[in-house]
Image (tube, rainbow, N blue to C red; front, side):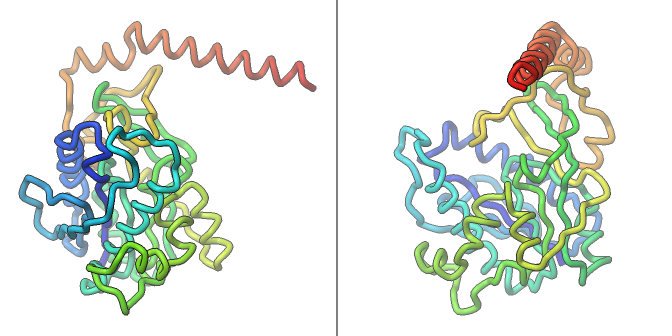
Length: 289
C-alpha cells in the first residue's frame, strides 16, 4: 500500500485560506484518481477542511502554533521547515495502522500520476523511487513545461519505504511538537521539512533510490500561496488531454485563451528576456576567465 501524506500551512500564514482549500481539493482529485485502491491519503493541519474529503482520506487536526507572525512575513525558513516536518511526523504516525509499504510526501497544491499506487502494489519490496523528471504547471495560464531536476525543485518527488522515516511507535497523533521533533531527529530537517538535498541524504544512509521512468508529478506554480513564489514564464505547452487524464488537472481556460497565454505577446516578451539574461550571464562568465 502507498500512503500519500501532506500538510496544510497554518491559516494565520496564508494569504487566502479559502484559496488553500481550493488548491487542496484540486490536488485531492488528482491523488485519489489512482487506478487501484491500494492507497491511503493523510492530511495534517490546524483547521479541518470545510469540504467533504474523498474516500480513503483521513484528516488529522493539530494545534501547533503558527511558524510566523500574522503578517506572513517569512524572515526565516527554519520555522516553516519545523512546522511542515513536525506535521509530517504526525501524518506518518497516523499512517501506521494502514501498514503502508511506501510513503509519498506531497505538497497540497501539486498533482501526481494516476499509476503510482499501482506501481507500488507491484513492487512492495522496492527500495524507493525519486522523480527527477516532472512537469511545472500554471493554472493561471492553463499551460505547462517540463521540469528537469524535479526533486531539487518540488517536494512532491519521493516514494520511499515506510521504514525509511524511522516512525516512532511510542508516540501518538496527539504528541507534542517538541516530542515529534526529538523522535525523528535529523530526518525532520533533511527529508521531511525540506527536500532539496534529500536524495543525497538517502544515499549517504545506504538507500539508493531509482529514478522514476516517467514524469510522475506536477509542480503547481502561480497559485498565490507558493512559499517559493515561482512562476511559469516564457513559452509553454497548452494543457492537453494527456495531462488531464494522467494527473486529473481540470482546464482553467478555453482553447483560444490558453493558446494566447502559452504563445502570446507576454510569453514572447518573457522568453526574449530569459534568453537575453542567459546571454549576459555567459558573456560575464567569459570575461572572468
